Length: 396
Image 1 (cartoon, rainbow, N blue to C red):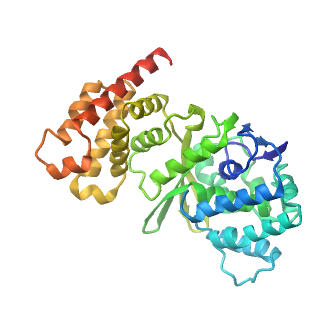
Image 2 (image 1 turned 120 degrees about the vertical axis):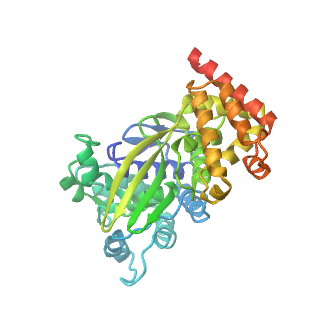
Image 3 (image 1 turned 30 degrees about the vertical axis):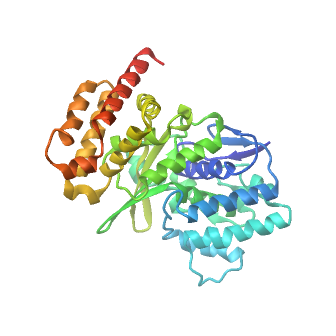
C-alpha cells in the first residue's frame, strides 16, 4: 500500500497535487478504486514501468490539450532554473516553461529512474510526509523553494477575508517550506490539467481553475471515471469566459451524466495575478447541484438529441463570439431559467414559455436556428425538470 500525503485541504497546493495524483493514478492498472482521505490518498503498489507509462500517458494528454491550458511560471522560472534545472545539468540559459519542464525534463528524469528500478520507491518517498518544512523527503533530492504558483492563498487578500484562519501554517512558515522534483512537477501538472480560462485586460490577469472538490471527494473512488469527468468538464469550459456561474453549473451536470454524485462534485478557484505575486480571489465555488444532476440524467435518458442541444446552447452562453446575434444573452437566460425551475424557484411551464419566446414564437429565424431547441426538445426538458423536482422533494 502506498500513501500520497498532502498539505491541509484548504490550501491551493493540496488541490493541485491531489488532482495530479488522481489523474496519473487513473492511468495505472491498480485496483479500480483508490481510497481518498482528507490529507492523503492510499493506493495499491504499482511497478516502475506502470507508473512510468501512467505519467507519460497523462503528459501526452496534457500536451494534446485534452485537459487545461498551460500555466505561465513567471517568477517561479528562476527558482526552478536554480534548483531542478541545475540538478539535471541543464544550462542556466535554457528557457523554463511548463512544457519544457515537464515534457523535456521530468519525463526524461522518470525514465532514468525507471530504468534503474527506483522510480516508484522515490516517488512514494517524496510524497510520504508533509511537515512545517514542506516535503522534506522530496527536498533531499534537490530543494525547490515554495513556488508562488502553488501557494496563492497565503497572500494578504484571503488572510484579510478570513478564509483560512488556523487551518494552514502561517505565511512566514509557509514561505520557508520546500518542495522537491516530484512535488513541484506533479503540482504544476495539476495546474496544467485544471486551468481553463485566463482573462487579460490591461494590467489585470485572472486565472480560472477547475478542481475536484476536496471537501466531498473522500472514500473509495472509481478514479478513472473521476478523471474522465474532469476531462469532460475542462474540455467544455476551456477557453470560455466564466460569464455566468449557473451556465457552468448546468454544463457540469450535463457532461457528467450517469456517474455517482461524489465524482461529479467539482469547484472553481479564481486567481488574481499581479507582478511577482498571485492572490486567490475565490478558493472554492462549488460546481455541483444534486437536483441538476438528476435533471441531466433524466434528460439524457429521454432524448440524447435534446441533451446534446442543451449542451450546445450552454456553450453558446459562454461564447463572446455569439453576442452580435444576441445568442449568448438569450442562451444564458434560458440556462438560468432551467436552473431556477430545477431548484423549484419558478414553474417548469415558465421555462417552456421563455424558451419559446426565443425560438418558435418569434420571426427571428437566425436566432431560432442558433438557439437550436425544437418544440420536442423543450418538451423533454420540461419533463426532465419535473422528474428532478419530484425526486428532490422525495429526498431521492
